Image (cartoon, rainbow over all chains, first blue to last red; front, side, top):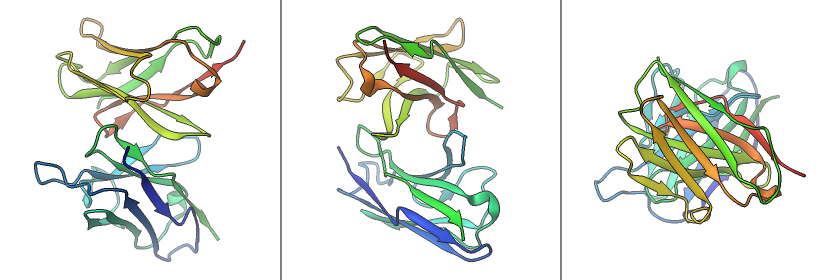
Length: 112
Length: 112
């Protein structure tokens, strides 16, 4: 299985400041169709995961533009330009290129 | 907008079969693919498998010998069966449409 490794695992952030989460895969996530199926999910406390980003950098409907994704191949990043209180939760990267699809271990974002 | 709701027993005895149903509202099962995912403290998020409405299925190899996913188009539902459960199968089970719409999840505990 493809191993997804996130860092850091815990990220204390000051409100209004930027945050960045790294995700690395154990093999390239470029699919045979040329797309890279790298997703980012947010899981707020007590809620189910919600997808924020698909195919590296595309925001899902309703996702604020302070969230952005970047990267290629095996290295990916989720950035929050200015953290708001509602952004508290655990963030997961997830690859949908190689079956079985796999998640990172999660990064807990909290307010300082 | 489409909503998903998981249902089924919250407690299952070891060696028995876990059975869950996902009911779809606000949309038809006859498009896209439909998944089961679980989340446990020990293993994190794990994609169990997915099924197209046409019946094409993919199971996680780690569970393939014990899992069955099926679709009931007449009821706009799909289901999960996991046989010979152990404590390691204790988790929150989610159903999802593709990767972008998830149910609220249901907690299943395996215990005698």
